[in-house]
Image (cartoon, rainbow, N blue to C red; front, side):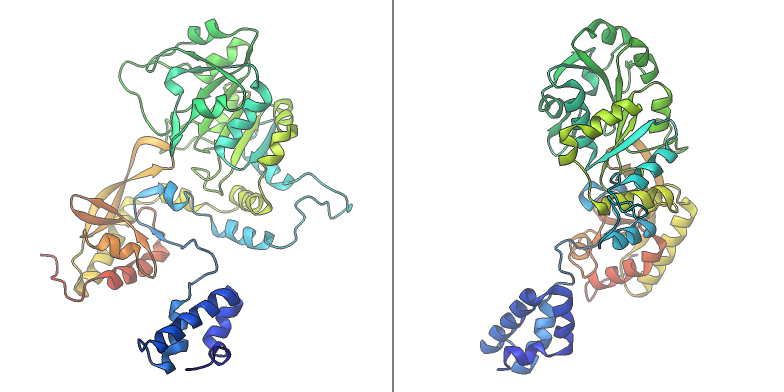
Length: 430
């Protein structure tokens, strides 16, 4: 039986020690030695077995290929960061001037360059602040402005934001009281006006971003509400900063502020295409009040988020923007090419048209023309468990790998993952 110190001198394990640390590597060696003692492997196979047992990275999260056709898949971390944002995160991983003015040597405002970039993208905002997610942005606004007072909100906008978290519960937890007005499908400006009184802190306008109500409906606009004489807080959810031609019904921060909103809250990891964070944009005095509230310290973002956000705002187009703008003809061409290559290897595959969605609680009802590789259903589990996990979707008894949210440079990795998941003998698709 090879000694532990001798096995650790193997070049492959020496590299793993630097990458993973001594704990996981020694555990893998001990497990390989145990298998050798039990006769499962030969003693000379201990080092190779230990290498095979090691995880690829020190962290537990594994990169995956998102072939679900949901551009902003919550379970897959929503927006993919741009190359510029990833580089910014790497640059900020060590000591950085996050709260230091290098010119004067004195303390400076945290995240000042990211906040400046955010204001430049939304000129209608008098000021900006960033917290750790969209829900936190709304919680900070409610706590600082409405604790012990009333928030007027439509019954049709009392939404559940996912994983069982409901907007009413979130707001009541801040100490605010909710004054519900209107009905599920129709709420008029007069309903808000009748409810406003001395205890009103603000009117809340929530974009129902993960569902649609159609038919006999009516809703007041931010412009109409802003004429009622109290602050209007607009929670747009998606993080869209300016109008998008493919998403005409999705509200954006700039338009809501120009319409009269005092404050807009949104998420940074949705249509903005950046890291998870909550954005607060609006009246300068109002935002300053929020930023100085004691809760703001508990909700603040770290230097890595600030770096990624700034690079998202100032850098090239994000993957999210590229996925939205993808040419359907090019998607079909990619699908046909991949299907042809894989079929030549004996894989039961065909290229099919399909529809993708935005996801992330944004643009409900909007579908985007796309193309996919159609495989037997049994591929779904095998692809998720592969060396490069691929997550697709099941539709009509087939596993679809939608290419809308797969960057073209990942096509070969996707093809190799399919080959690895293929049974040894498979009848080609007829």
